Image 1 (cartoon, rainbow, N blue to C red):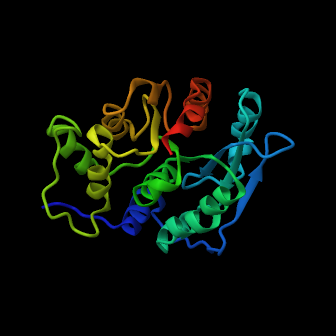
Image 2 (cartoon, helix red, strand yellow; image 1 turned 120 degrees about the vertical axis):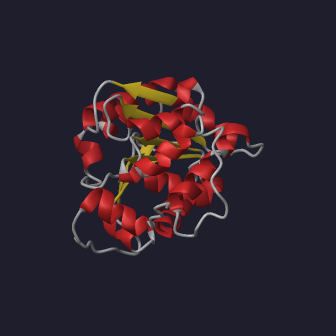
Length: 251
């Protein structure tokens, strides 16, 4: 019997293990970082993990890395905590409060970056609002329960896997994986997708299934686990690759 979990159930069972509640705001809280005296053409919007805060990107050197990478890239860190997932309002808040205003300000190249739960959020946003961003980088994202990942592995990978239809409305995991198959052979222009994870990360098996369908320069596996050291290493490699500035032609 298939286990089909809603996004709310996933967050409660997979991450929280408790009933903590968070206050949501409209507009969602953000912190804006400019890397120069004038606005850059490039922008990264950063979503935190479950136990992290939007300020942790500064704390762990992600903002400084932008300032040192040699390319003008501004950043917005978003207070996208559990409450926005619980109330299922994360996606419209990101669009209305962050992405749309950034486009209106003149940013030509907009990327999402998410860690763990934030990586899931970035993927879910792109699934619905792909036309609004140029790319996304997801670091150790949650991509589904073990049952779902084993199902895809048993099929020989994502390219060979087909979900049993129809997919239940609450089965967001299989719905997401089905959408990710578009990165294999879609004729439409999709935002550039980059995935990175630590070799010993608890989500490594699922992340590897996604990495297999992406170009080699858009998939990173580094030593380490589900931790900032691994994510920082991947982030540095991603900035050094220059893929973020090349992606501007995709929109």
